[in-house]
Image 1: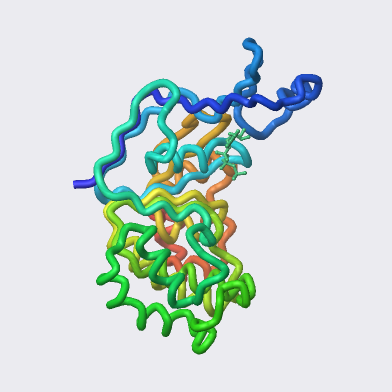
Image 2: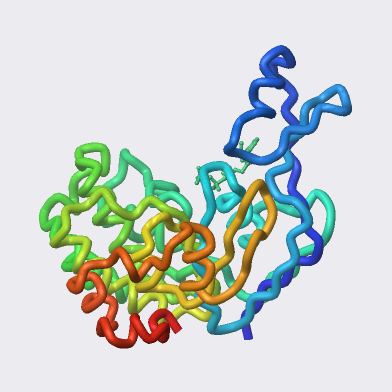
Length: 273
Ligand SMILES: Nc1ncnc2c1ncn2[C@@H]1O[C@H](COP(=O)(O)OP(=O)(O)OP(=O)(O)O)[C@@H](O)[C@H]1O
C-alpha cells in the first residue's frame, strides 16, 4: 500500500548570494515564502511546519498563489528535498512529472527519448519496449520519431513527453503544471490517457491552476499559502474558500457535462464529491 506521511516538516533555502539592500522590498511582496534575515545569510522558508498523511487512492489537487510552496511541497513528497526540520516517509515508487522536458535529450531521436524518459520514470526497458508502438501512435509524430528531438517544435515535444508519461504505471504520481502547449484536439485525446493514468496510479498529487482540470482529476485539495497548509479538505470546499466563489457557479453547461455533472447535482451541492 502506498502512502506519504509528513510530520512538522519545513524546507528552508539559504541564499548565499542575495543582495541585502533589496531584501526589505522582497519581504513586503505578496508572493513567495517568508524571507528571514536574522543570520548572516538570508533564508527563504519555502515550507513551514507541514503535516500531512496521504494514503492509497488519494487524488489531491494542490492550489495556491505563485510562490506559495506547491512545487517545493511536490519535491518534498517525491523525496527530492529532505525536510530541513521535521520528518517525511514515502512508501511506494514515485513518478515525479514536474517538467515535461526533463530527461529528454535533444541530440537523440524521439524513439530513443521515449525509452530514456520511461526508464527515468521507473519503468523497465522491457516494459517500455512493449509500449513504444502505442506511444508512437498516440503522438502522431510518424517519421519524426526517427529525427533528433532538437528538430521538434514545442508542441511536438509535449506530445512526445505526454505520450511517455501517460504510458507508465506509477505507484505515486506527482504532477506539476506544464501540460498545455498542445492544440485543443490533442489535449482532448491526452486527457483520456491522463485519466487512465490517474486510475492506474495509487496516489496522485496534482498542482494546477485550472478548476476544470482539478475537478476532472482530483477529489480533495490542499491550499498552500506562504509555505503553510491553509486548508486541506474536499476539493469543492477548498476551491470555494481559495477563490472566494463556488467553482461550479462559473462553469458553462458544456464544462459541467464534460466533467460528468448535471446542473441539478451541482446546484444541490453534490458536485465534486
Ligand atoms: N531552489 C530554490 N532556491 C531558493 N528559493 C526557492 C527555491 N525553490 C523555491 N524557492 C522559494 O520557495 C518559495 C516557494 O516556491 P515554489 O516554487 O514552491 O512555489 P509555487 O507555489 O510552486 O509557485 P508557482 O505557482 O509560481 O510555481 C518561493 O518563495 C520561492 O522563491
